[in-house]
Length: 486
Image (cartoon, rainbow, N blue to C red; front, side, top):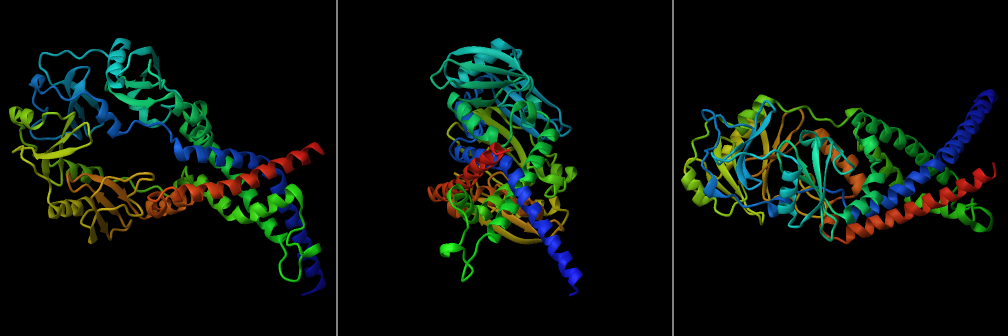
């Protein structure tokens, strides 16, 4: 190589190394503040997740259906089942909840002589007191707050926030559209989430209420942090000597004091840190890399409603549904059913015509699923009695058993179907499976072998988080000392 080329390459290497140090030094000062916050808040989230009102919690608290008052048959127009049709109680009155395929929703009394009370402060007080089994202390009308900021609550706004006079400081949120309880928080959950999910997700209401702005902030905060972590790992490797080329005294690192802690902890946990911050950046799906194609609306409707729902005999349904807190009319895989749900989580399926125990057959589910997938070839059918890598629930168990159907269509779609009802519980294509590994695994380490054998999962996350905290805190201290030097 000519001498000029050697000098040019050497000069380029010096400039590159200089920029490597500059990026790590100055971007790293701010990055380490974020890293420390994310590690601490992530550990909090292991034990206190973001508040949510689960179906099981709702069913455990709502009133059993007053079947004596039910005298209005299911509002089915000529056998055409709407997207959602269920019977439950609303402020002491049985009601039919109707969700149409076109998107509109309405509630009608199942007692012909009943009038539905407006969802005002008095209504919210009664519903919250009955649901929480405690007196109320305060009621206020809100559009959103920190615990109802996500888009999933949009169809329920405005909300009535009811504070109960109970030892837990419970706050319940009543939907203005359905009149039901849609969110519940306790004082402990709210306090811990200000130390957990809110800082971890960069989730304050003022930012999160604008979803596009929030996504941009997450991406542009995480991006420089990734650069600082990669630069630090690179420098850490460059400044490590093994074999006969060690530093003075046979040391592998030239550093002492805080720099030594920063160097060693960065080398030990640097790979985890990079994977963790990169996966956090992927959490908002930048450029929609993992977005799946929208399902065919006509095919979904054909699977979930055959337009042949028979008339339901109310007298026989009253007898069969004693003790149920919710009754749903469903028609998956061309099998019209009544699904009865109870406070203890038990579910019973009855044939809509006979009101005798019934469920769709596996061949019927497979045939309907093929039509749902536009005739794609079914390449595997499995009955899962334990979670797999994609049908799982960290810290618990998902609904089981389920049928897993794998197709050879271009997106390589997998369907997870409830064999009791025929309901499609999840649709996971190649992109969503990639996202499961690129985000969920690298960010949560939520393999079943770990999450189903706690505290193994906790120990692993605590170990990595402590190493990350040592790297972050030492980086903050070193950055502060450099800033003080001007």
